[in-house]
Length: 150
Image (cartoon, rainbow, N blue to C red; front, top):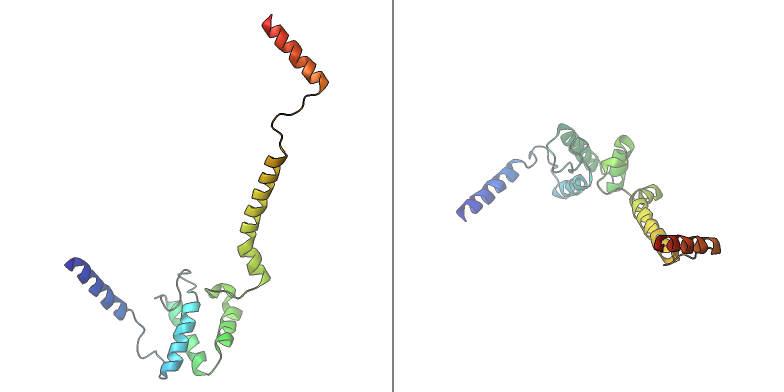
């Protein structure tokens, strides 16, 4: 139990140590809060699965500086994100904007599965239990079965 408490305290100290340098922060707390909210939605292009707020990569540091500079200049959140997507592509956003291309990208696999399941059900419904034999086939089966008995 004490080991867990010690590990939790150590993790807390590490998190505090990893926090942003106070000299980098914006002097206005509301602007800094806005910048931090934007950080959460911008992907670190080096780490790719972390936001720039969580990443320690140099590029993430540079992107944080760019965002802070643009917040300081009074640009809107949408304008800042547009600037980043113009420069790095839509991949830079962790939550990309709605578009038909994104809908096709995310919805396409589900559509393929639903269509495949529908085709499978249709084929199983149309399949009869005992296929009908033509008169020639029935006669051949009868002859083969008689020859097996003899």
